[in-house]
Length: 303
Image (cartoon, rainbow, N blue to C red; front, side):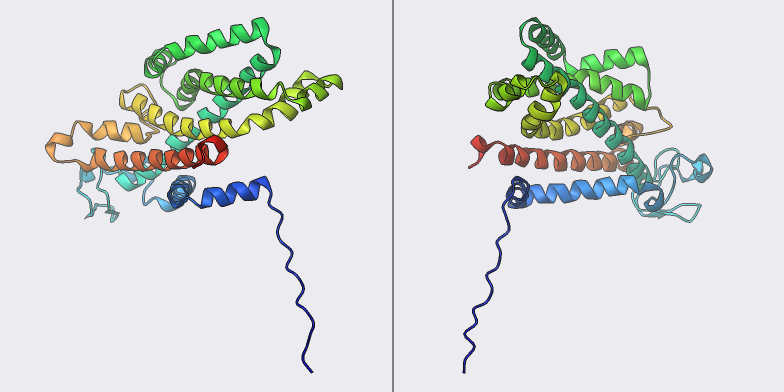
């Protein structure tokens, strides 16, 4: 006698916005590759003390006699310098790994703070309207009218070198992009019924802004935030290359490139070349993610 018992139906998983976002993002192999590369770079930066062959900040581990060794040479301390050394005998691989930490801290930290400041002002401008909106947006127009690199140079010339000063300078030159982006989205959301309902319930303005209005402005903010992280890293590298960024005791990728620039024509290309490649890979990986996030989070751009 055959078994006529039907198999139990498999319960389909409910498609949530997060599941849909993950599936659409994973469909683009280039963006996933960029994410994997960025995660690898972030892990290298986080675990730098355990991964790097040498601590480039510890003067006791540096030997001036190992200065400008070519890639693959073994130094006097017995370390194989796979990417060579700079003029101070610093292992370039270790310098790049530690430099990634400084670059990511400055880039991500400044982007987060600028996002908080700009998003708050953008929400306030869209919700309040009138003179408040005009005043905030005139500040945004004034900020965006200055060349970014020139404004950052002026700020750092006043504040001086230092990781914290670089973060402050980047926040000052970046907040306007977030404010304009959030204001544009908030103006559309402000006319929705749920905002009118919250106002009829006489909810506090702060709750309406950050519990109701802000979550619906996140998609464009995530996109601009991802792109601005890459932009902040590139801008910090430019400032450090010009000598107004981080101090020489805490070299970022930009400062590592600057340290070897004068040796490029003498054949010691690796001092600037490999930090430049690391900087390029970091920025490209972030831009690949940001470009696809724009397509995923904006239905009008989907093909």
